[in-house]
Length: 146
Image (cartoon, rainbow, N blue to C red; front, side, top):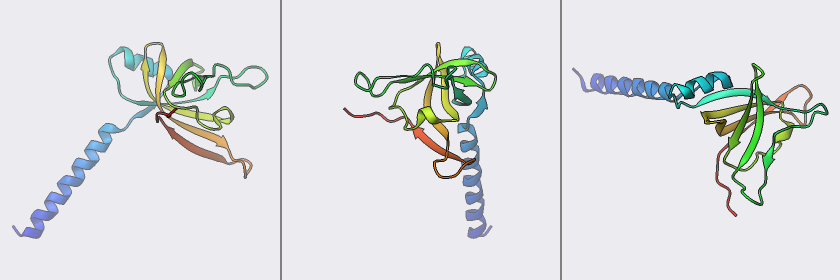
């Protein structure tokens, strides 16, 4: 065998290894009910849950708890998934900017006890500049410094 053939086989093997590894790290979109069932079965994989903020009759978001004076790295909110299951979510980072204005929210994390422990939040907000288009922002858990 030529050296170029051996190098080609090694490159293909490395590429296959990368694809298999990244596939194992991917998470799936589920509802809070499915996330709870996964947690009860001992499955601690990260999942995506799509939902909207729970709002009262006047359109104001309910269930938001954020007191940066006491703990800037603790934010709680209530999310309603696509099957209308209401769930408390905990995010151990500062509250994302424009969180209250979000039309749709994707939380990435896993169920822990009575709440969904959120590691990352994706916000889909109405654009400030163009009607009918959505602006997507991503927020990852980072510890705030006092």
